[in-house]
Image (cartoon, rainbow, N blue to C red; front, side, top):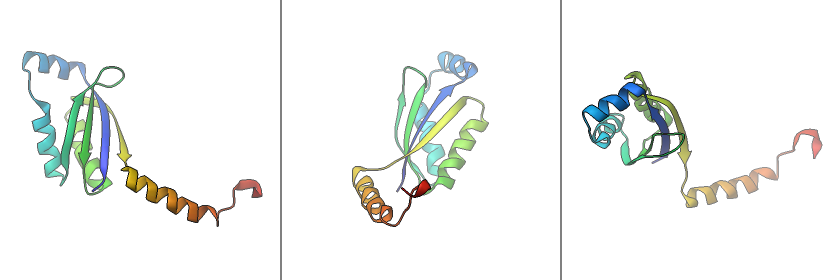
Length: 111
């Protein structure tokens, strides 16, 4: 099943609310992903540009997009950025496929 890595930020109101009433957000994220036919692999709070990182499995882009849209619609998270992750074995397959394709591909300008 495809793995997706999402980074995002909490809004100021969300941070204020979590300070007043601390909670384990992994439970809520896990429930949301489960309803989208996905699974939470990990939720991490991060320093720097983003406040959190979610690593999840979902059957397709449609399911992960639905979960992200639902999360964003609540107003507590913003600036969501999602990347499809590949295992090293999947990457090896992509490189092998690229090797086959590049033989029949001509770059712009004929080079």
